[in-house]
Length: 376
Image (cartoon, rainbow, N blue to C red; front, side, top):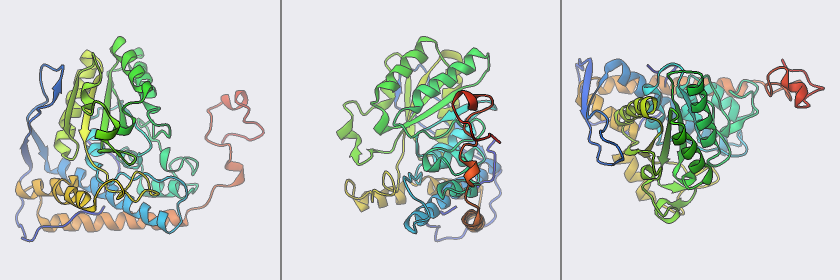
């Protein structure tokens, strides 16, 4: 079950009007054709309830709207520094969260705003963080790349640097005898980093409950997959670690693959997932995203593969929701994000005495030379 408040900007709506949506659940048939060293695939007939579909759609809308507003804030110079947006990849974050059990852990790279939201962080706290305000999720000290929540070990500014940490979290789960898994996400651009292979080796050596997820959005910064990877089949790179490739734009496919991988990791050790997805913005806001790909390519994905649009079409065609209900959901979602943005813009800046707060737990501040400031 998703937690937190879910809400954002949808793509286009349909021309016809549907009435009397009455179904309480709907079934989707999936097909998994890319398996590596796996004897079986995830379930190919999966069900989603009306409540789950509504919550998931609302959360994807919420993330999309928030990221759009973040882009506007950046252009208006309310946000300085790096800004990596998640628009287009929402199904990965939301589908992953739907697969988790209490106590599971997630860690990702610097494109982390959406995952923070599915762990219950509000748009207000994300946007406040981006603007350096005291109410930010990291007290205004982390910025775009460093956001955290219970069970979410955050974004990481070092390319691939979060992957060994994820292996360590999985080790902690096993060491403590917990029936939990750590999901570690990284991008295709990070997939060739040496530390990832080191983390895989230790994870397999000790059969840790670790799921490694490559979010393949086709470009490492401005370099396409085919130009930066000798082996672009990222799910096959783990040698002795099995893998699977799936559609990262399909919410239900993401959910089922993550559930399957979670079960595998608990029983047999690490597994790699490659989700094929897409980012609509450039690598960061300093990158217009059109020097290495065409506007037609971006438009084609938005029109034919958009994760929000796909869930809308599925929900309407299976009578889970009407178009008028979806339009109302979009409207209320937009308003919630917009209201939270105004709150964040009026939130206070950190005070000078806050400079050394929230750095180390007691009594480490003395060991680390934090004094003369006090931790509060």
